[in-house]
Length: 111
Image (cartoon, rainbow, N blue to C red; front, side, top):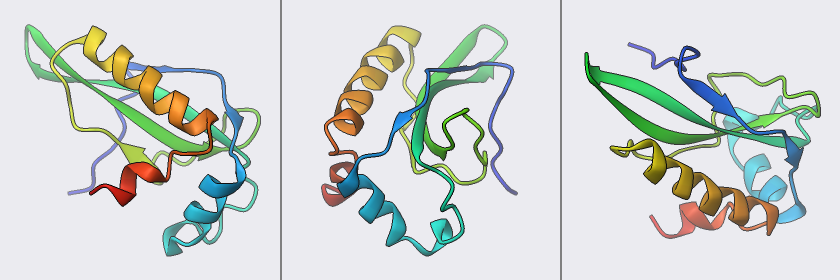
């Protein structure tokens, strides 16, 4: 079964430019070979209903164009789900800071 993005609970930030090191890292991945028009990162929070009363949240990062168009099946990064929206917001700020400092690729070096 293919995992799909939950657009019902998806909150994105404005796209911003992909920096050089992150672009090089992305281009090394075969699945991004045809995304040459993607010059920006689109970072958002995705909520997933765990049960009727509980949502879990994660940070997702997609290559996009400057208008924010992206392929929901080509996420560059998906964090593990966290229990609260506040935890997810904190994580989003950390991931965004790495991306703006051209260090998003370092997430994968520590796995």
